[in-house]
Length: 331
Image (cartoon, rainbow, N blue to C red; front, side, top):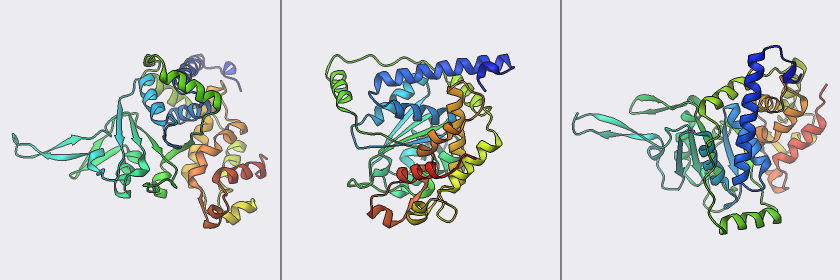
């Protein structure tokens, strides 16, 4: 059902305004980030869905630039942490300091107290430091010295990581991976895009992109996305897709052979929320099958734990999700 068919004029007007604003944000990001339109689209979708994002790609592809630019165009407060092996949890969350005047302890907030936290090269830090983000990503709070501190809302973690086979990296634990709504793969640019990147970065410096989306406008878009309807038969399709990632429930032989553990319920939540945002941006009040299929890769690829046999034979989660999409019926 198209938005023009909705009877609630105010809601329709708000949806149109949000869709136009999101298009402007996408254009602003695309002007800075060359040749990564799908990456920009998935990052923006996850942001409106209210989830955290994990960006993976080799160094130098503009992952950090994308996150920094996103903070500039949305007007969200921005914090950045460069993850290194010697980074401590308190360097991220903050720590208790002795106050000479009062003779007591005061909490000094860390960079995590921002709307948008860039966790740069998150898999270069030790597991102890990585786990400092677990509470913040789930409950949007930080506990220090026996006291709980609320993080500003909205709160997003956009983490970048290098491929795990690179030297000096620590794999993220499954519990932390599951807290990311989407895992977005940043591909190497084409020859034409490489030439355009070289022209932009070796010429006259460009002006910083303007702020085109206020925080309250983002909050409105997030609220509207949750009002998008998903029909029962479409929801059952989403459930079947997630169920098909489990080797004991999947009709796909490759999943039965190569997958050790399938997606958690968070995978279904990510799939549905992403599809609702896609429907909102397409000016529809209902989720379509195609919306779910578009969101399947970023929502599920990091929630499938593969067997060693899959790694040995070069089988990827994306290849298995592709087989799931081709095998699971919409009916």
